[in-house]
Image 1 (cartoon, rainbow, N blue to C red):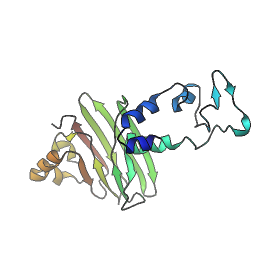
Image 2: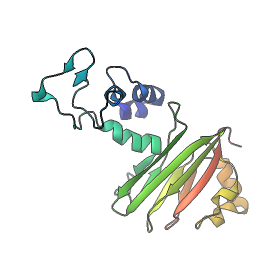
Image 3: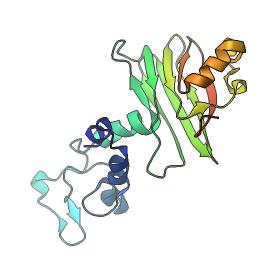
Image 4: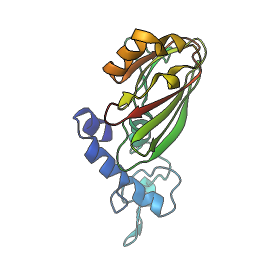
Length: 192
């Protein structure tokens, strides 16, 4: 459900569904002590207790696509359709739902892909780390605020002269070269 809502441009509804903690919802079970995803929305309710144990797994994937959505949407870690397998990653976080920060990693066959972001006043601050000998296209929400944040781990040339200004005008899309390691960005909502 959440991937379909996001694909349809309704991230607002997807985040509202994720954040809901009343029955039925993902957070309803968490609110009542769940540490895994239950097979059914009504596996346990305040009014009905436990349902039939014959069809009541408390560690089930049926509603688990929410986890995949959190990696792909909140953290923004995804594959490139033209180069599958995370040899080239796409990093495109889509913050929403009142979240002020997110941090996580995905263990690809090439190594850890790590994304951390936070809202800092009106800025969006993001750190990305990709495995050695891989590349990534990174979409930064907002506009890259200044070149200094780009001057690390092999991106020095992007932060200088005309290329720096071009990055600022084009806003959101940057390419991480091989072995770029951990790279920070600061972006402003207003593009400046």
